[in-house]
Image (cartoon, rainbow, N blue to C red; front, side, top):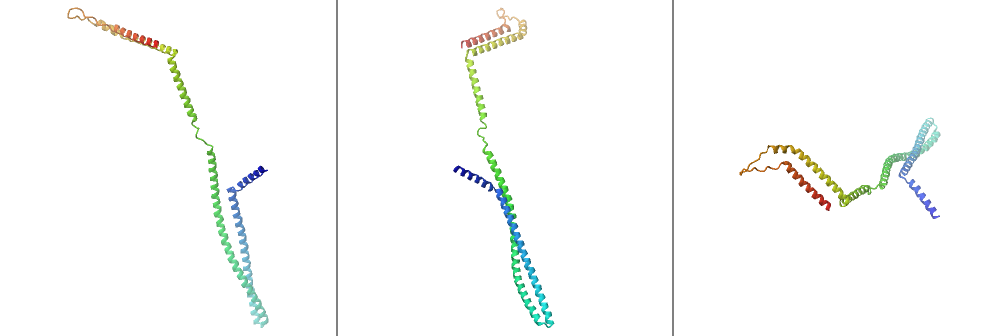
Length: 271
């Protein structure tokens, strides 16, 4: 039962929240002001109507008094004094009525002017409040938009948007470290040494072929220099030894280089 009453209270509060919506409240206030203005205008019309009736009654009473005075004047001229006296009494009653009506008319006229002024002020107030209602509605719409934006931004998060980049960078670093470790292990293993030996053998063969190419390129120039040379005789008459040709020097260089590469190969194999 308690849960049922709590549900009813929640439903009632939700309905009240909807009824207290600023748009609805401002529209209702505007309607109330308009209805009050229409009602007051109707009352003002009724007051003006009553004033006009008093004015008409006063004018009729004044005309009646004037007519009675004219009739009494004619009766005196005709020697009918009793009739003239009766007519003057009726004129006095009409004058009293005119006096009363004039007082009522003056009061009604003052009241009507006050009502007109009040209506004018109310119209100005209604226009002012209508403009304020429009401004308040605009503020309410703006507040709703700001609230919607705030609610939308509450769901945004910028904390973990770059975690993917960090994870990718970490993965790349791990692979690079693994590749370095495998390369290092390959260099210390038998397979690595065999690969190094194979690379050294290829390098030595390439060096040998390059040396042969250089020897062939320099052979023509060396033979020409050897043919053109003369034997120099020493002070004792013995012929001077002929300088070794470039072919012998190049051959010595090649042998020395080969010996050096063989020594490096033995050192690597010994390791």
